[in-house]
Image (cartoon, rainbow, N blue to C red):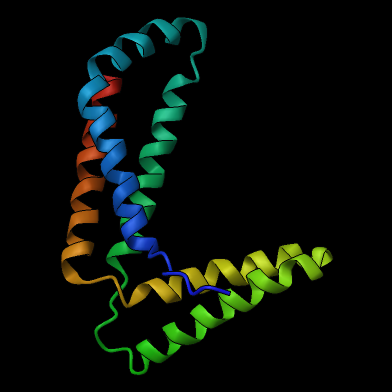
Length: 142
């Protein structure tokens, strides 16, 4: 089996947030018009924006609270979780009735494996993107 480069959850998150922000930057005026028209048909449209803003706040808190500088053995823990992911992805087809627990472990392993790639600059960029997106989302309601 060929070795694959593990993905980094935080780089993927930064990329997804960048794409989302770019789409908002380009389309907020059009989206705002559509939301205003939709509000008369689907008044819950504001709930969509409010919940998205709330989720962005939760994400910002989670990212802000990650401080990896003083975690001894993080590189070894990341290596362990990388190997765990390879093992579980390989074994998953043999254990179809264990898909739920396997996915639970894989989710945690993704976070741990990615922590070593969460440098200060990536963290700062993610937090700034979240702030920019929240401002754009709030503007949809005004």
